[in-house]
Length: 296
Image 1 (tube, one colour):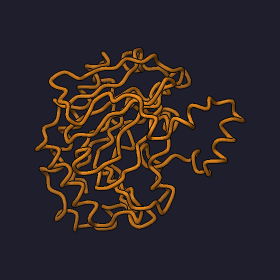
Image 2 (cartoon, one colour):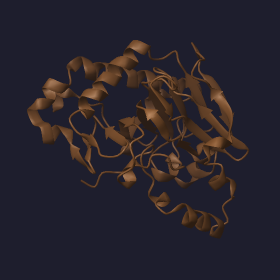
Image 3 (cartoon, helix red, strand yellow):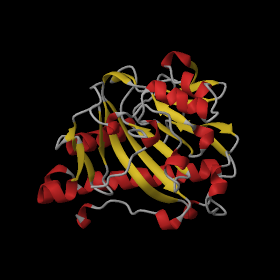
Image 4 (spheres, helix red, strand yellow):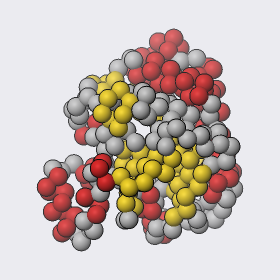
């Protein structure tokens, strides 16, 4: 299938053993904090806790932009001029989050990974199945109409548009210059042991480095930290310490995709964590369309 790696579930350059990773980092002159701060015990600050309600306006944390964007074509009115990370609970209701979770559960019930991390991409059709991926639309054909409804896809598109508008407003962008890009997908993570590298979602990575087209990344959480699962917190890895976002159903976390927002996901200890990664680019050549059941 040639399925791409994806932000929360795989990073090719971190496929080595921890010892080799440390040697590589030292050999490259990379600061030792990058390796040592991956310990969950090193969390130094919670940016937004599970019990907080951030509404109606996003809580914004500004950070200096990295030089990553200079390595790519710049698009005035969209390419990050101010960078940061933000969280809001006022965009998607818990009822809508539950509906999206049920959508993901129905799709993933058709297959799923043997390991702890499964994905469902309504755009490309990518679905985890055992140790590989299949195209859900080709593999299941007419059965898809019994799994998903037009209302499922309408809600998905509406939420995507709200996310796009919020990112544009927060970062001062022209929303017409911001485009949905791939990969954009549902993820289901539990504590099952990893079977392949695709299950190793916990490695640190930078979206702009991994995917050159990414300019803004967002995650919409569909389950609650501490109730539906433990572990699974989203961790920004800054030089002066780790800063975390605790998932809450309906919570949107979004950020500029460069090295200023190096991040990882804490390993899930128990329960099941559902989320949607929704990615945006300033380059129209990398734009993707919304999924449509009618097009299947």
